[in-house]
Amino acid sequence: MKPLLVFDMDGVLVEVRESYREAIIQTVAKLGGPRLTQRDVQVCKSRGGFNNDWVASWTLLKENGIDVPYQTVIDTFQSLYLGANEDGLMLRERWFPRDGLLDRLELKYHLALFTGRLRAEAQWALRHFGCPHTFDPFIAMEDVTVEKPDPEGLLKIRELTGASDLTYIGDTGDDLRAANGAGVRFIGIAAPDLPDREVLLQQFRNMGAAAIVDDINSLEEVL
Image 1 (cartoon, one colour):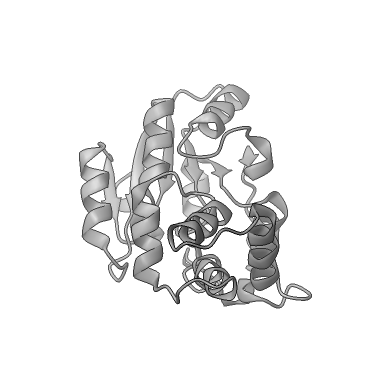
Image 2 (tube, rainbow, N blue to C red):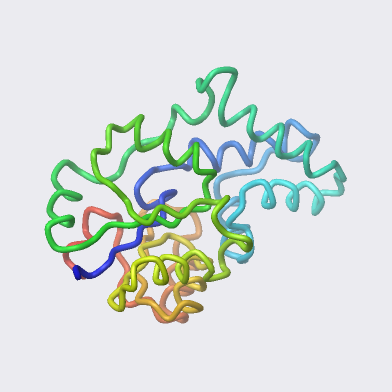
């Protein structure tokens, strides 16, 4: 059996600062909160427990004295991200892997996906960017009962594949916490222009990331 590479999607395969993270900023503002910055969002993510962007938005509103129903936050966020007809902030996303990267990796590794996205939104991204590769298992938000940093998704992947050689590639402390909880190797991605990057780098180092790279296109150097 080939070794298994499990990818997170956001911040790893897809650039989402102008889509999901911008949706957090706009959701908070639209529901009466302050106009946050990308750094504010990164600081929130670095606190841990905010892999779910709806929860992050709701919490940031509460911390600014604004109490709105959680479902209102979800509805507002989704309307901004999806738009009226898949024409919202989702169209600002960019695909990270350069041509040939996943082809080369697929020769040596079995590829899987563990993302906090809704399955339909993850599938949309793969279609939108014309990704021809199969990620199997493909674990999305609906496939776990507890989201990251809980390791449930990685444990499911291990159970489904029987893989003993498994590496998870992620871009947050919660991704690494999930990997540690499942007892699997972790490679962290920390973009050079990420706000508050040093905090993320320190988290990766302190929690035992096997390697840290600037983006997925440097992955082969550390595998």
